[in-house]
Image 1 (tube, rainbow, N blue to C red):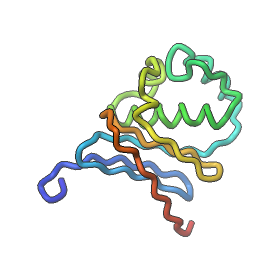
Image 2 (cartoon, one colour; image 1 turned 180 degrees about the vertical axis):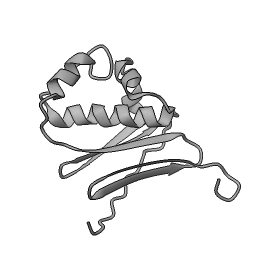
Image 3 (cartoon, rainbow, N blue to C red; image 1 turned 90 degrees about the horizontal axis):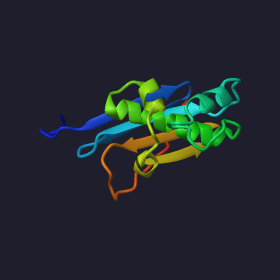
Image 4 (cartoon, rainbow, N blue to C red; image 1 turned 60 degrees about the vertical axis):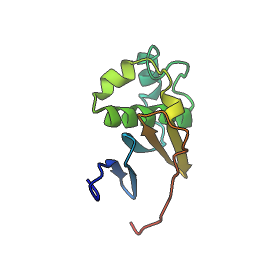
Length: 128
């Protein structure tokens, strides 16, 4: 609660980067991942073809990481379980999220409430 008003917040960090979302009216979730080749990307995309990875095969790493960060952000916002989210149909989740890429980092901010307001990203460099 800030000034008597309830705020929703989500935080995710990895080595060298932090992503934070805060909103008074909207439940939010964030995720940040390093885009890198991994042996299991194709297997993961194949395993969840009926869910979040519908229509992608895991060979296009940036697209894979867009879906992966979206699944993580949705899970945080809904306070759910990641495997359940991955099995769920993609539905309109992408329309309620913004992705931002900086170098090899993929960031996602998801708002559980459909909104016409764009989600703004602000990047601030900091020492590692």
